[in-house]
Amino acid sequence: MNAPPPLVLVVEDEPPMRKFLRAALTAQGYRVLEAESAKGAIIAATTHNPEVILLDLGLPDGDGLDLARQIREWSGVPIIVISARGREDDKVAALDLGADDYLTKPFGVSELLARIRVALRHAVQSASPEASVLDVGPLHLDMARRAVLVAGEEVHLTPIEYRLLTLLARNAGKVLTHRQLLTEVWGPSYAGETHYLRVFMAQLRRKVEPDPARPRIFLTEPGVGYRMRDS
Image (cartoon, rainbow, N blue to C red; front, top):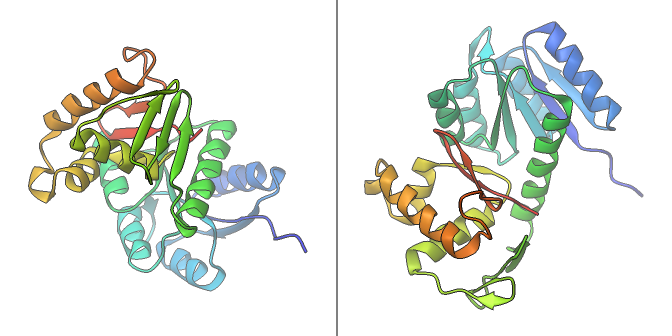
């Protein structure tokens, strides 16, 4: 028996945007559940167990950031923020609170669908035993052996570089904020030291990227953080 298609919860108070999202998602075979408010979203999320949540930040009965924080207290479901707020601090706040991705309105259907596919893949990877091998472009990472190969040649990384690489690899396809990376790799007291991250990302790119000046593996999300390609 085939599994039902993924259920997407759309949390959006504007009827035209809900209509647009419903049409785009159902055309691709997704099941769609809708909520117009934070209260409705909590009821829908706890009752129907969606595989992905598309979350608008401007809701009539509360801020989407607060809703993301509430959902993260009890669920690991991927949350993709869709908002007209394009400021970097809004993106950082949403991602730091547990959102998996952020799309600024207006956005194209193909971009939305790509982000959903990445979120679903990441959710499957997180639920299954941790993969010990990752291949992205010329990079081959074997976490069990702590081996890093680029185009078949073993590359030596410092302990910090290796921790940074494996953190990005375990979250491949997901945006990690500067604060998340600094806290995980260096510790909570370094959460504001973004220059540390810039220096080590530059070093990592020089060792791994075929063309460090035009990175294709470690992608920069300006003002927000970094994302590692997942394929």
